[in-house]
Image (cartoon, rainbow, N blue to C red; front, side, top):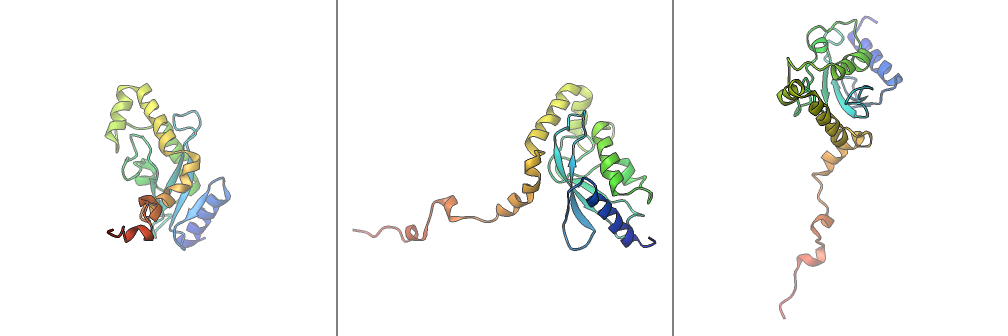
Length: 183
């Protein structure tokens, strides 16, 4: 278990053998998606997020890069990029931690106990400090709109199909292209 690559493989396998749906991005074990459920007894309960995980070559000595693919309203998550501001992952990471810790401890703690004094999403932080009830309502609206369990796997398919244009969308066919002959 001395090499980082063996540790990487073991950590990814532990995640796959747990209750997590893991989808590899490439052939290697460096990039993948993990389905993450919002913690119980929180406004995020019932939401499901696709989390992009990138493991650096120096993993586990260097922390993984974690980001939400679908939108989430949270003071410590950048709404546009999905980047996570999480002290344990970004600054105090230790090789003693593994990927299961990220999904069973760090991310649930982040959602249960947001830190509005160190925001990546200023709007969420300000709303949370000003009116907790309205903030929680907006979190639930985002969950209903962007984190439905049935939509998590479809997001990439929709993004790639946007580029493909079918003839049906424009109501045209080869016969109509020539137009009508003048009488």
